[in-house]
Image (cartoon, rainbow, N blue to C red; front, top):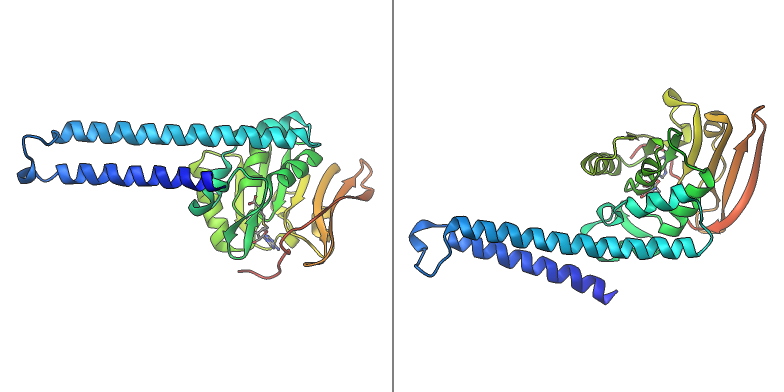
Length: 268
Ligand code: SAH
């Protein structure tokens, strides 16, 4: 962990120093015959910044590979899920101060008392949905947008609802910036689902509910699957798999114990 922080700090410091050099070479009257011509200084600045960015991206890619290898070494084996997790840059979904820890297998704070889920749980829940290209998926609890990006990377068309307006806006901007076109974000209370886009092949809820919201069951297609953490806020919660068969019969099954932030009510 110390190494993670060191990497970011080191890179940050070098970038600041380079910018400083270019700035000093700028004003005409202050150039001496020892100073670099401004054009060359700019070139060096760009080359050095590009080099640092590439070095940092390589390091993040290496850590991401290790993270997914660990997850695959546990019990997640769905190829579409693992391939998607290998591509999504989790470090772009966490606040800058946590970037160095983005590929550890634990949740991280994203503001407003909320968290980006632990990568293993993201992989587990994604696999349970059996994501395939062209599937229409509803997510409740956009948070950082990471889970939505993983589903989109697996080829799903994702509709995701977030109760905090600021988080919804930030996730929408982040996903657009990173090029995830298959995700539509809405600010609202996910207890009601997203009737305008229903029915869904799959529903994923990433906040703990006290009960399974009836609207979400209604908006699930026959043959569809929903995964939702259910239980008390500070007590035991279980990930529940809800399956609707071809005739519309619903069955539920408890999978694993989990710990999620609570599903809230009312706009924020
Ligand atoms: N899937 C997210 C992490 C989810 S944390 C990610 O990949 O980063 C749970 C999120 O659910 C939080 O952002 C929280 O604000 C949101 N949330 C809680 N109650 C909600 C509700 N009723 N409707 C929609 N979102 C809700």
